[in-house]
Image 1 (tube, one colour):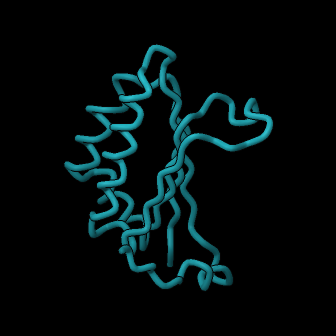
Image 2: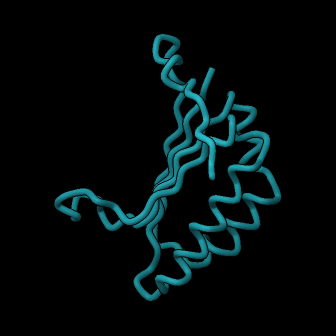
Length: 119
């Protein structure tokens, strides 16, 4: 089974671009956690939605894959996740949307893809 975790982040207007870049860099470190399925954690910014108003002001997105609900709970309860969110996000956020779902059995094959080699 695969569980997909999606989070959209919106920072307050006074938060600098430099802070947002640091947050993105720190979020990406979470892919090394064993509870992230095969290191599959993707962070994206900025939104390329056209028109941009459809992004509702959200500036950063995270998508991560987990083996099951217990792995997601381990991810969210980890000291690393707590450090990143409590240091770089919660004190600065305007809004946050989270959506988690289990992949249907007939779609599970789409969650199995070879990892690319990084050069």
